[in-house]
Image (cartoon, rainbow, N blue to C red; front, side, top):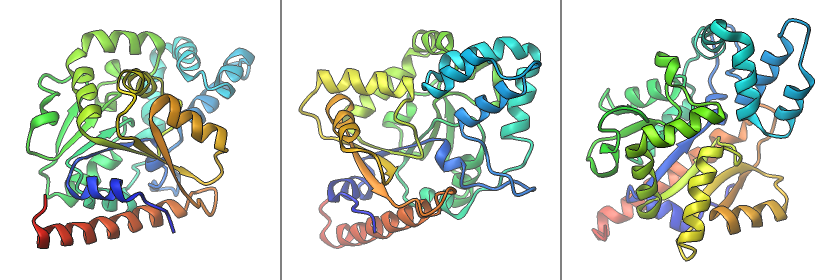
Length: 288
């Protein structure tokens, strides 16, 4: 059982929560050959190993240290024009089908989902759950900030999409450029952090773009209600304390059970049951 905070359940039930999904959510999908999507660091590690002459030590070190932006930039430079093909072969060609947990996430009906992934696994699941009514936006789209005040259900691709690889964000330079060129999105993101509760699932606590926004807001509004970060059990208390103190993230833990994190879908199912029960109560009390 996961100890889901009552405040979080309440905010999801009232659609005052933004879900942020990372590569750990995509990992639950399975391709036609039984293959699972790689995590971002796993993809970079394999790309490094496949370099002519073998893995470059400085790139290996950067990956192990969590410096994925520089590792990715160096690998992209080395692969040149073949980089796009490598991305699509890893994240698109295996035809990953959404798993039941992707549909469970859609049934939480949070209205706004921010995806850190650039494949379309969660996209397909959301359209199925919501009958094709989910509006998909990319960080660079005109009118992307519509998700903040609009009445539709929105999926926002924070790092771009494989449909337009030239605008994917995964290097230090691309992050810096995006924060200037896509200012409307980042302004809306900032505003959403102030007005909604965020729940990060399948996401890494090292994502540089997310960390910058969270840290800036935490020190500007130190009294703010916490956001939540779902992680497999085992994070040491010092790290939990740092996440809470520096990024206003409260950790919620689940038992991963095995290397495929089979406990993750169970955790999301438990959350859905709690949210449905809360919405039942709200429908009776009308205390929205």
